[in-house]
Image (cartoon, rainbow, N blue to C red; front, side, top):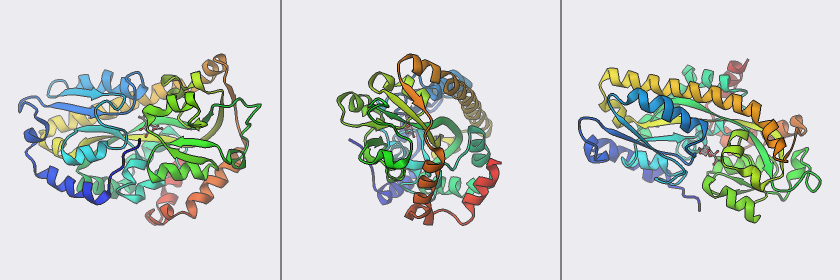
Length: 336
Ligand code: KDO
């Protein structure tokens, strides 16, 4: 079951939570706060490893990092609301979840916009992001610390290639493709040519195993980490979204820290993101061979057909009308 929440209710909560004294919000000891993060990712995901090995130790002098993986603390898609309410301190959020409150973030859910991990970093650090970051802080009470590389999303299907070969969007007609629950995600699934259905990340394995869904679209490192290769037969390398997450923190918590601790926490976030990015990029290279050894058929479709189909769908969509004028051109210019 995918949980969503109304924009208005959470924005109102954001203002309320910002008024609460920090200790009351988190129940933390006044001296060394415990910073709780909730994520649907597993503890062996490269983003988790990076936070455990780099972020936690780097802030341990002044805060205790307490991550909760596999959506065990908050369901996927409810973390931003939890931070806005003052019930959670950090999350690994996404442009698609932010787009629920600020439609302009949907520009990063449009297929084939970001070209690479390096492009993501350039865009996140470019002045074009300033209004989006400010709006996220002002309206949600959430500070976007840094951009994390999730990987290139690929089509991962239950059926073997002999039964279903996906070369162009038309081949996905009638294929039930699980996508995360927000509108922007569902639209991407539709833009690919499939029949998108909402399902929480933690339910994908069973969905593939039982046939409730025909396919999912996570990057190769996730296919391995979540063992989706055990219940699927092929991967069609659409690379339809060079996907990212944002490491997010309660603005109230961040602002409560003295300047030196704010700087240390920011550096810890950036260092962890860099560490995770390099490891995730290496895994993406290495895992094609691993997955072929596991018996999966891996092939490239007609990328031009997918790119034009997806880009045209987004350009004509209501999402595009929410994108700040000229922003797509600026993003493209940063891609080189
Ligand atoms: C997913 O649900 O497919 C997704 O990849 C969406 C991402 O934004 C992120 O939430 C991710 O799941 C989780 O971190 C699990 O890897």
